[in-house]
Image (cartoon, rainbow, N blue to C red; front, side):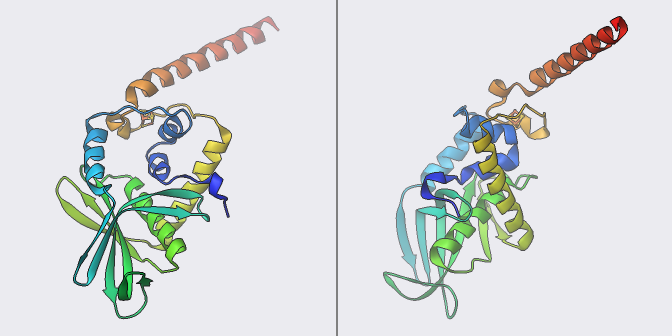
Length: 224
Ligand code: SF4
């Protein structure tokens, strides 16, 4: 179990699943640069980040709900948590009669990504809610802006395991204080930190550096 003072931003898991260097640049070096993709995402989140609750029949909706897990060592904010009235299971709410099943919903710009970062972030939110509310949360949903649709996500053992593993890695990365070198990946094209990271240039520099080291070693061997 972590202490309150050890908690790291839940959003760091999504960054880490995207790219370890990106997570380090943002959370170790506090570097951030907005591009079209992050600006669109921020506008989408701003709409969901206004704290409020609303009731519609058997549904209650809480926006901008603060989350925390001492087991994962994470804290953050859920865009939306829906509470669906159920006959059994679920949780009791202070201001409503009956039982309610929590169902987290995270808003994302663009379309579903080939990497698991959005699903991991949503799963971490669900695991925070489970710890806070003492309820089982088997599924939630990601809402994508393009096209505007919901994708349901099941929090199975594999996804929960990956989420726990990434939470441990995030703590290890922050504790190390070391930003890993760049490893160019297809997602670099959409990364808002591309110009600061310079993945191609730095990896070329490393290749040149390795070549020079190798040449010096060979020259020393010849002399010996
Ligand atoms: S440009 Fe590529 S290597 Fe650099 S932080 Fe972004 S995703 Fe990672």
